[in-house]
Every structure is written in C-alpha cells, then in structure tokens.
Length: 253
Image (tube, rainbow, N blue to C red; front, side, top):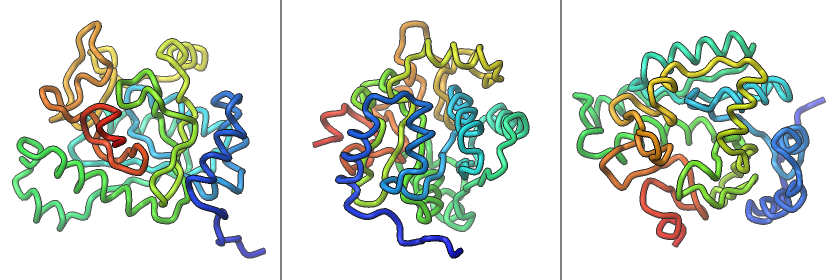
C-alpha cells in the first residue's frame, strides 16, 4: 500500500492546541507512545545534540519508537568527547536511523574561511553551521522532538509538550516538565552512560569554542556563549520567532 503523504490537516496552531489539550495530563512516556502515532502530529524526527542530558530522550525513543529518525547536527566544532559519546550511544541504544547533518562545505568556506566567525558573530556562525543545515534536514517532517525542559533557564520556563514553530511544523518536548532529579533518576535506574564532560562541570554542552564550565549555583546554561546576551543557537522558536538571546518576553514580543 502506498504511503500516505498528504500530511496532517489544519493549521499548526490549531493542531498544537489540540495536542496539548489531548495530552495535557500525560507523562513523557505517554506523550511519546501516543503522540508519535497521532495524525495531528504527522511525520516526526528526533533532533539530538548528544549533549549532557540527551541520553534520556534517546533511550526513551529507542524503546518506544526505535524507527524514529535521529538528526544529529555536527557543526564540526563539537568537543571530541561529544563525537565519541555519539558513537557510543548509537551502538549501545541500537539507534538504526541516525542522520548526521552538516553545513554545506562551500557555504562554510565562503562565510567563515578561517574558522573565526564565532569570535565576532556567534549568531551568524550558528546560522550557517546549525540553523540552516537543520532546517534543510527537517523539510521532510511535520514535527521534531527536542529535549527542552522548563528548568533549563528563563527562555524555557513556559515550555509545553507541543509548540508551534510558526506555520512550518510542530515541536514536541516530552521532557518539558522533568527536573534535574528526574533525569538523574532515569539515567541511574537505566544504567545509561553519561557525557564525559558532565563530570567536569558542563551541564549544557554545545560547540567547543562557545561552551565553558558552569560554577555551582549558576544557571545550567550559563556556560553557553558566556559573556554575551545570547542564550540559544537559533534552532528554537517562541511564538514562531527564533530565540537567540534575551528574555522570554523580549523574544515573544
């Protein structure tokens, strides 16, 4: 039988409202189990950085829906530990459809020939190495699964299970209501390997040049683009607008 490629019906905003109402009282596992087959969601991929907390969502998906495509954006500026960890998890969790996404070499060569763009324009660097390649990879999907959680910082305090990414697609945040203790318990109970940089003070891990250790008591994402107002790489949106820095209210205006 030919695959139905007609896609979900209705606006993204209407579908998000329906999904949030339908799964409001569900937990992370139930959201994944039921929502991934929900026609209001459509075709979905998991986008993973294979960072500090990524193993929880990767494990959940590998158990519940192992056929789900996993998109891994390799900016070619990641820590060696992240690349090693990605290979380790791919084997341990038997992830069978990992798609490594990279920027077009000629685009990088033109916009950042000496690899120093991140030093004076972090937004532009993220755009060519992460935002544009991911957008290209997501064109075949109606939604994508993220590891965004409310506790992670000011720009994420109101994250819901489902978010509208403009009129383009739906973002699914199964772990939105989980706290750090929930993640810790899950990792321990399932004997999952940790990212090697976590023990060195990196609770949030991005590209090597723009990530630094976090001191006790600091925001978990304080080590990302330290010293600047930037708090997001730009792949996430609030009310259809890309979030790269500032407060929730500023980015939602």
